[in-house]
Image (cartoon, rainbow, N blue to C red):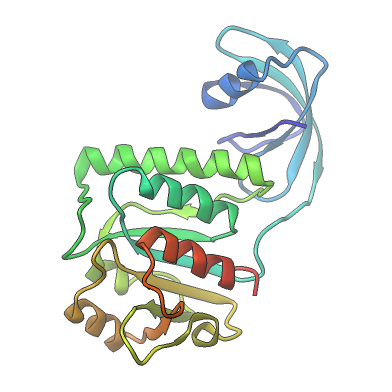
Length: 235
């Protein structure tokens, strides 16, 4: 059954869907009477049925709410030096599927991708749309928190309380699952292409981050983020 994200809060009754939600249903060629599932990111999902297909809008009848959750056991927040080109898009999509609770892109000394102002706002909107589409596909009813890019120093001093882990190829760290332990909330920091500088890693350690590794091989930043997410989200 098709699943569609609705950016506005849902309630029983008739609802007109526009924008991406309407385009999604039009691409699927749904017809009046067809059933679908809607979710608004506030938890649970809604049974619905198409009542009218228009050119720019789709009208649906929103029916019963089901308190269904498919979130990971642990709230994992990625603080990630943005990889260049389309790799950040891919990271957002796959991290959402793996159950990551939040993604904070950061700008570091070795970052290739640097976003500010209007460019940053447009890219953030793109990432939010990618996360919503990934939730439609994987069954999540809550979107991960997708934050605007920040300088690394600002990101290190913000974020949720909980265990803080620095993923680094430098010797001395523990395996990432061991470093995270059983903490219900974990923030995981990793650098972009080229990694973090020694000074940046030192600043993270001074703020309570615990060094960790994924093994003997050096992975690309987006691969490392997803490998760690697969280990940590459903601990």
